[in-house]
Length: 148
Image (cartoon, rainbow, N blue to C red; front, side, top):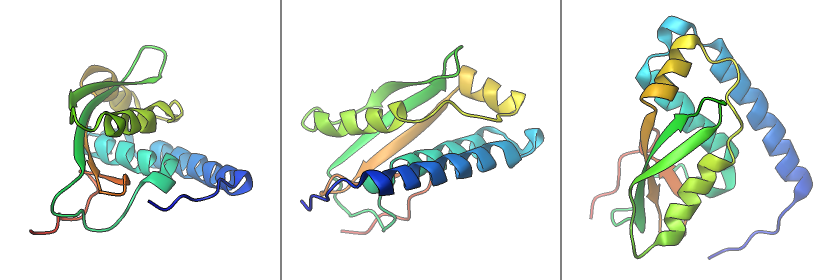
């Protein structure tokens, strides 16, 4: 596995861009358009922005290293909370990486009342598709998986 050197300046620039884009995405969608599917796509995009070094945008390999399914909700204080629906007991570090990608998300800004209600009551169910190298794609935004 390739190890990259941590660059604080690059990380800060990426974070600043991610926050700006997230705020624009979450606040620019009209309330009527923020149904469950739109909320789920916006959530997935937000995870991608805040986990850029852990995400891949290629076609997922045919045999994935792990699949982790989480239900993510907003609590009453507006913080993200994740519940594990499915994991791979032989790959607990992949479950931890999926959970960590949710934990590092900032509280959402500019949500419509409808989007907030969806996230607090139903939440979103999302699958993390892990490659052999540990990078992931989220099912909502992933390209079609390669054939064996």
